[in-house]
Image (cartoon, rainbow, N blue to C red; front, top):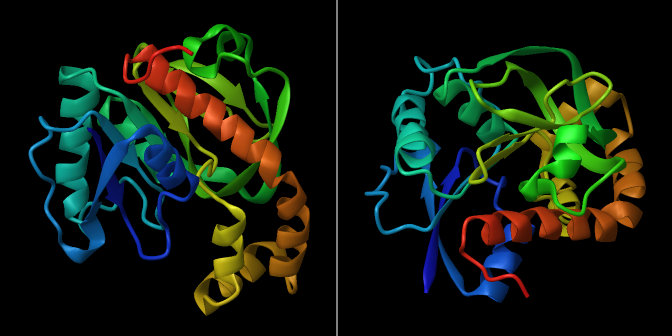
Length: 243
């Protein structure tokens, strides 16, 4: 059985629909809860690294000392081992930072449902095969990649965020948007006062209901897009044979 290592940065922010994909494809996931002090294991036994989002920023190493070891693990995994990597939101930013790119506070935040556009490079890249045009995705970020690492290709952008998706070779992919969010992810926010308060700080009173009403009908298409990206990564790296 193949094995996926997951770096998690905060409670209630899990791998979402990727857990379904792993179950369907016979991939066993092991999660490291970094904010609780769990240590990163030896990387050698693993086939894939999935790095999730989080409220912290890549430069906050004094506040979150485990970021140092996490960045080193990402450098080893993507740079030295050239193994399959998928980073979501913070995981996307950590990929850029660990490999020599630049991450800064976003000039304009994106929270809720927003549109991204696949670039010409993206439409031709194996990791975005089958994706073109404009896609609606879930966003929740206050920082962004302002300079991709050397050699990375930008696969998608939004009107306010130049690097919504980037590839390092054919084995590593960073997504600024939350491809893991499911209907259950959004439903769970209703029981998390801190999430509701954060949404209202960015979008105003009643924002949870507005975001939920907009997002739910779009979820099947978002899921299909995420499945395509996941399958592309698995096939490009040899973890899954082309059907």
